[in-house]
Amino acid sequence: MSFLEALSVSKVFGGIAALDGVDLSIKEGEILGLIGPNGAGKTTFFNVLTGLYRPDKGEILFKDQRIDGLPPHEIAALGIARTFQNIRLFTNMTAMENVMVARHSRTESEFFGTIFMTRSFRREEQEIQKSARALLDRVGILDRGNALAKNLPYGDQRKLEIARALALDPKLLLLDEPTAGMNASESAELMRLVEKILKQGVSILLIEHQMRVVMNLCHRVVVLDYGEKIADAAPAEVQKNSAVIEAYLGTSTHA
Amino acid sequence: MLLALGLNLVIGFTGLLDLGFMAFYAIGAYTAALLAIHRVPFVACVAAAVAASTLIRVIVGFPALRLRGDYLAIVTLGFGEMVRLTLSNWDSLTNGPKGLPRVGESIPPASLLGFTLSTNLHYYYLIFACVLGAIWVCTRLDQSRLGRAWVAIREDEVAAELMGVEVTKQKVVAFGLSAMFAGLAGAIFAHWEGFVTPESFTFWESCLLVCAVVLGGMGNIMGVVLGALCIVLVPEILRDILGSTFANARYLLFGLSLILMTIYRPQGIWPSRRRTLELGPEEPGESSSRDTLFDAEQK
Image (tube, rainbow over all chains, first blue to last red; front, top):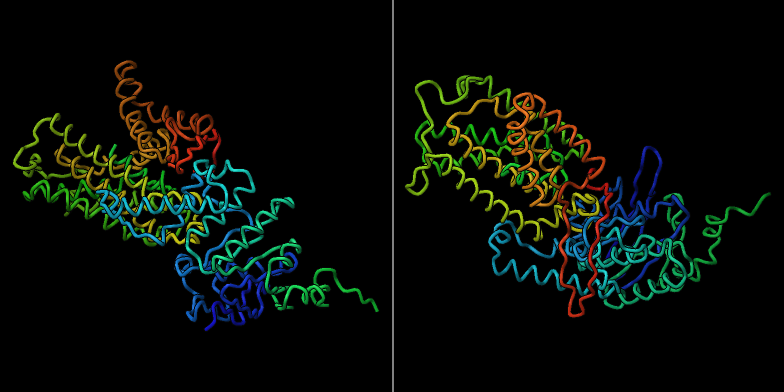
């Protein structure tokens, strides 16, 4: 049984193939790096995986279930959570509430329970708060829990995005450049956090530009260029791969 | 005020600009009026009015809620006008612009549990109780899974969907709930006035409602109550002081005050604050401060 399997996934935007027959598989417990030059289709691939875009061709299987074509909230409920390259928090809600929102698909109180404050509603509300506190603690920003998301410093906003994604109890976590705009010590801290999440049994697909992070952290690396997969190997091998070097640095053969 | 609270669910929480809210008030009022003429008891009229406006709202909501922002505003505005025009032209049912009841018919006074509401004071208590109930419902929702999901939709629809919130379903629920408020208010209005005409449900009334919500503070329940009070009471008070010339200029003044509000205090008189939650044994004393300038809620 495969954990996540993308089979020749294609996505075309007005004649330009953002993704062109990409095959990609993730094993359970694995951390897979997804790299490539700007515009290679990495974020598009995330958007296809999470249901934001419907692939034009190909299929995506998550635990042997077709997920392409499902609405995003169902895919999220199945256990695929993500963060965003440009942070997309609920800016006018507190950090706690941001995490609490993401418990939505794991809880079920409806209108009448809410109005009449039934026991199950109150118990569920307690549990939501408890797990939200635990998650904020896990990423290390519990003390900022009641601050509005937009008032958090940049690094904390990144962490809050991860906490919010974890609130879905994901089996697979998609991180879109989590260390973007961070300095060396901040990204080192974030790497430790990612490792911790991985140890707790969450598989991770990581888009990252900092090669040091990718090489240290990832079990395997997939390289995209112009929507095509050009390499899929262990980090050390990818570094030596001539096609990859060419994609990043351009061709060196002149004549 | 009931109406403003209902509308706040849609605009304040979920961030859907609705310019045709009066249509559902009208549907509620006419449903109640039509039934009451045939001597249907008050409680049943209210129930039917709530059901009718909610049902129509949900049916309209499914296609309309696929639109975003300004487009939704246009559709709701159009629907509001459609309802008003239908009411003034469907003579056989609504007696057109002459209103209901027809000559020789009457809407009997409402009676509740054997007690007949005959004076304005009685209606005052009834409405007061309903407003309290509505405030309770809204407060509960605000602090629940549903309310949080709605605010998240207002803040970032795409992110909310990706965090597992069924955006379309939740929008329809918010939309339908707000119509329940409108239907209830409409039914009470019909019994109280004893007379309904399409003139009571114009676009201007919808506008005033939006004013009440924006003026008071979008998303804040008490703020909206305050906003509705302002919209209703300020003209009454000023009419005594300034005489009847003011009555003609009141929309002008409201417009002016709205423009001033958007420039100087876009969050409303009493802005919404997110709830502070217990963070565990070591209370950090971190208070959430709110910027004066915000833009997300305008979108």
